[in-house]
Amino acid sequence: MKAGDRLSVTLFFNGPSGPATFHNVAMETTYRADGDHRADVSADAFAQESSSWYFLEGVDVTATPAGGRRDAVVAFGDSLTDGAASTPGADNRYPDQLSRRLSAEGRQRPVLNAGIGGNRVLSDSACFGERATTRFRRDVLDQTRVGTVIVLEGTNDILMGETAANACTTTNRRVTAAELIEGHRALIRAAHARGITVIGGTLPPGKGLERGTPAETRAALNQWIRTSGAYDAVVDFDRVLADPLDPEQLLPAYAGQDGLHPNDAGYRAMADAVNLDAL
Image (cartoon, rainbow, N blue to C red; front, side, top):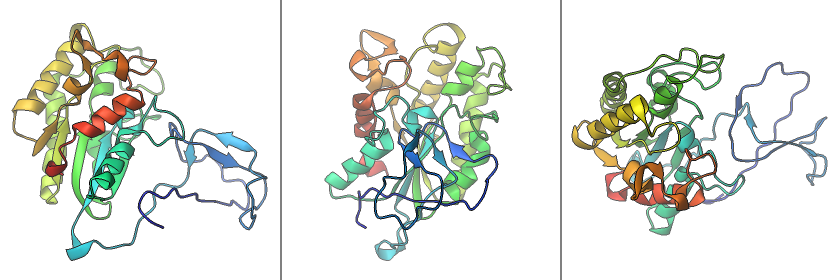
């Protein structure tokens, strides 16, 4: 295989698996069939479809870069990194588009998408995974060849603190900017302890973040990310995606239908905002 090739993986289960681990918002199609079709030369049997990925957590590439460089970049975050509202099957999440940009500029390097829709910095969820401060070791530090991580987390801590509790949002307490900042500091310390460059992404505007306490908390966290110097570099997703005429909303040309997630063009703008020299 060469860089940019698409990979299909076929799994066969010789009996009921029980509850499946899965990546809910894959923005890609999984095809299923009854029986063992590993040796099939066509895909005709795979008539069942799902928009989630199951069981497979990742694929390691064994090629070693010159000089043993740690050249992999991890995009770590929530649904804004996961690619919610992008075109299914088009690979237009911002990490995908960052990878293509690197390749187009002759700076090809692995880009790992560690986004989980609904994920939070400070709270675990039965639906949206372990908190960022817990899963950071598995999803960033223990990955192969990682030299840089881009962190974009905190939107769901803010939003879910304003909603009624349910099985997915519990615990849904209101968080402060100071608590989120301390969570970000924990991620920075963990990355630096491994010699990993860590880039902070400001939280974009969007539906539910534009008024009252959510707006104030987002603004305070973003101001800290921009000005504290705690991150090695900053990518200002907020200013890139915001409508200059209404900075509490996404620019209409970049907004998905829900007003919170970008569309394909918005994810492209996010990828273009990353300073490649900071990686």
